Image 1 (cartoon, helix red, strand yellow):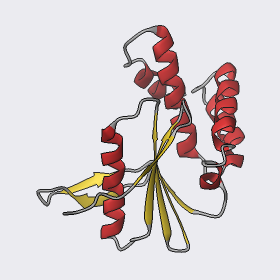
Image 2 (cartoon, rainbow, N blue to C red):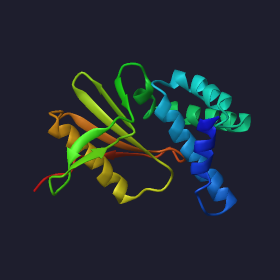
Image 3 (cartoon, rainbow, N blue to C red):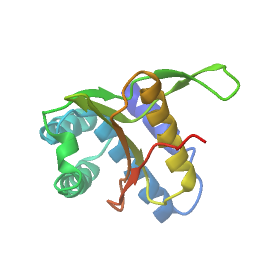
Length: 171
């Protein structure tokens, strides 16, 4: 399919060892799956869709099912993928940079219920302080929109590590 061709060409842009690329590609595929679901119950359907479109092989489908099951059954992560949230997956947000120019930011998953907001950004496997700064930017944008009860998290897809991100304190 066209979708498979586009995804494969994106993956082929990676460099490094075959094992490293497989690891990175698995993370990218899992990111794709999570961006397409609302709840954990949606995973099998999304994996079948990706298989039908030729984006993944049956072997990859099985591996992704196991990995997503492992992540989404984690008690820290499972509540983010239940049906109690209003969800904004991969939605653009408008904000201004330090010089006042308009910019578009795109968190992976934003959820709300009862005036509480949660931002989750998916990463592959290695923690980086830049990831924290990125999520702090999302939290700042939500606060500018009047959503003061906002929390942020980094979810490292391949390791299962979660990092809570607190809003940047302005001095």
